[in-house]
Length: 340
Image (cartoon, rainbow, N blue to C red; front, top):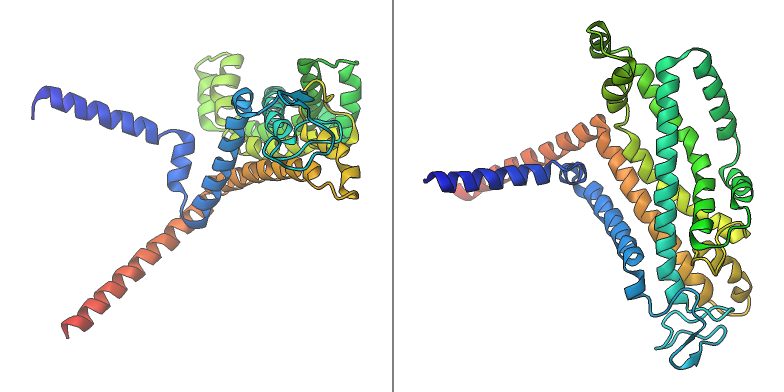
């Protein structure tokens, strides 16, 4: 084999190893049976809504606030048809377009809310767990007080305080996202703080302190990097809860205005009266969208949570190994019977 061929094969092998070492791909390869089915189903649902959110202007037949098209006004409570596959709302909006554009609103809100809460909660948890003392007690007391409030009630209060009469797209989304952010900060604070308290007592942290490493270097390079392993799991679980919180805010009238962005909770609120009149399409499709995206995030989060548990992973491997042994033994027995 020539040197050029060896280089090409080694480069291809290294790229394959790098691709297989991605965290999500690694978790997917470790999953088996029902676990893998749940993970694939969850990732498929998430991918579907991400595609809808990113390509909403190309996929949606109309804008989320459009009341007329090439053939004139849409009309109120029009049943599903070729022009409006999901029908129209009481205000005359196209339901299909509202559902598709609502996925973009949900995605933007999730990204802003969860990433902001991760940043704030992780930073506070790192400082509280590493420094300790009176600062730790004060931060724990504050986060416990926040955590004691019902999440939806706290989000409503924060939405009223933050909104300030903003009705633009980014104003409405920012106020809703920051309202949800406050709800999730205590969760990330607790997770990171407990890990920091454990990690800072490890021998490698003491060794870094002995050789003269600065406090900031020890905190961020040694302690923080080893205290965030469970954050992706909490992220996926909190993402589904943020969808429900956003829908709850919109349903109660504290979410995003309809002329700012499409939001599934608001559409459900306006469709409550339609159910008693036999108009089912205005409430069905926003509700189905909420159920599917929450199901996808929940399945993904629960699957990743199980895969991160070494006891469950070793149990699945042992079960799979026993199944292979049993299959091999059965094949050997059947072969012996045929030989006789």
